[in-house]
Image 1 (cartoon, rainbow, N blue to C red):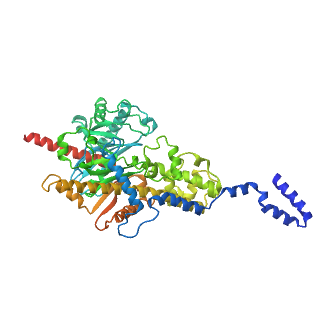
Image 2 (image 1 turned 120 degrees about the horizontal axis):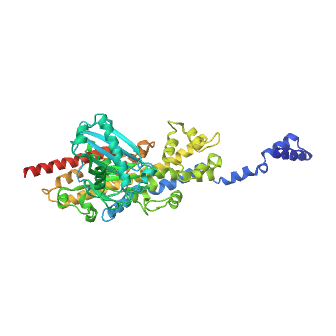
Image 3 (image 1 turned 60 degrees about the vertical axis):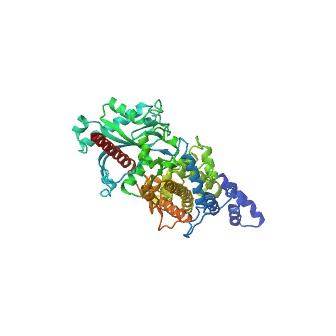
Length: 564
């Protein structure tokens, strides 16, 4: 009211200069001097949205050459993405020799043949969920529908209270949930009550989503778990399988852990069960990891720990849990937004690649860039929603919503406005278009780096296979299977995880980069390919497949003993 009164007084004063009252009022109304706050805001927006997006594309995608797709089919040795892949390959080679934290060989040295069948109890302990399932394996030729394989499944949330259970208390919680699920499966007719209650302990396959120094098919030394889990307290270095089995016995749960597999290895096993060309398992959701089936000669002897000679006599290859997120230090180009994220992280150098590619961090990079865009371009009216000032207030699901345009909750504009308590008319159509492009660049960078990692492992595997074959005489063990590996025209990568399964266009972008890298390195896509294939319910299915393999080996061993 006071501002209007002052405006009228000034207009009356200007009448003496020969203006009409209306002219004077209009001149003062549109004058910048009448709205100093508006003038200040205009000066703060020092660049256009187009300029911001142009720079974002340059710094996110330019350094690794992922801001375009190479269209020619000839070799392109100077492709920046191929050069990044070679740098990653060098880091992988080094990690395979002595690093105890990554490139961890499992005990599984054979991929499934696809003939494995039977009903198996499988348990998946992940970062946020415990799942217990009864899996019915029917063989590669019969199993076409993943949903028909898992005949019973229960999920239990691992909340903060569960994560804070120390040592044996966590495993007791797990054992009780397994018991509950078994009772449900018995009531549903999937498991015989008499066999469970009166028979030998039921064999169980366990998918373990945490680091483990594996020492046998059903054992491994417990390592720090991370993710705020305290289950390792007081149990560090103790055998995981023996710990579980001891607690099952104490609580009279008639179950025995017979097989343990890392979740990334489970993804590979489940993929190889249905596809004989699968050699890699990729998980990309909250975190990122890859399992690879690699020649034993590629791995330093110290990485295997203590294993009997009989294991080496049978093993030409072994599944390796790469712990991919730990790689990329000093070779991944960082933007100023990445550096802000890193500066606020409690372990900034622990998982450098994960910061750039995984679902947990993609939304945070987007949030940091978005706050800068609001300040400097006038996005969302130039006012930062208070919630966006909180670290990790933007998740990858919201990025996916923005790119997709809508989800089950409604149109992206309305959902975004509600999430961040925006005033009416925000975000505008132009705001949404800007955010779509920015989010797209961040996701595209992630896909290109993951592609470079997969290709680096593929090249590393092929080079090691060739070196191994060159050392072998044609009639020696392993020579035939190694030769087969080298002649595979199509290698498949089984994948799972919310980013690959749900983020719009991510899988397709990743596949395009894999094709580009194959062509840049001089291969024809008609002769050699790396293809992504879905691996649904991979942890449970992989745990069951691993268990089936162990049970088959035990049966063969018992038969040999009986014949002796």
